[in-house]
Structure formats: structure tokens, C-alpha cells
Length: 87
Image 1 (tube, rainbow, N blue to C red):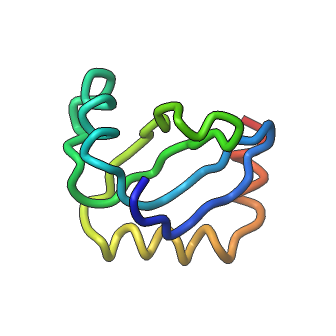
Image 2 (image 1 turned 135 degrees about the vertical axis):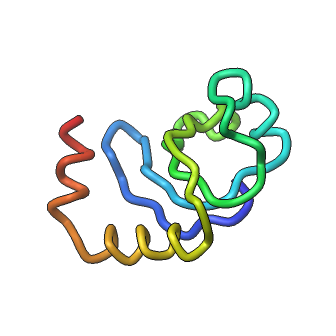
């Protein structure tokens, strides 16, 4: 990841994150998710126990504004984070 805007613990050393990814991460992720092109902002799960492991990209935001809206929503909603932790 290059630029991180949001990170919330999910348990087991995993974090739900919003941010940008590197070109290398995009190239490796593109094999599993065609929408990952390395440009823009992504929702992904990173594992702090394996920082060199590829983050699992869940979604791409349509714009920086959309990513920032999600950050604002998640920052103020502990209930949302509890739902992610239970998953």
C-alpha cells in the first residue's frame, strides 16, 4: 500500500483498510480481480503478521470523494466495524 487513509482492526492481525496500492500490488492482484489497475482508492484487507503478503482487495472506489465519504462513515460507526469483526 502506498497511501493509507483508514485502518480498522478485524482481529487476528488483519485490518480493513482504505487507501492506494502500489503498481506491483496491482499487477499481482489483477490476476484475482480484474478491476484492480493500480489507480485510485481501494478497500482491502491487510495482514500485519504478513506485511509482505499481498493485501486482499475487496473493492475499488469510483473517486477520491467516494473513498473519503467511506472513511468518514467508518470512522464514526463502531457498529459497522463490529459487523466486519464478526465476519
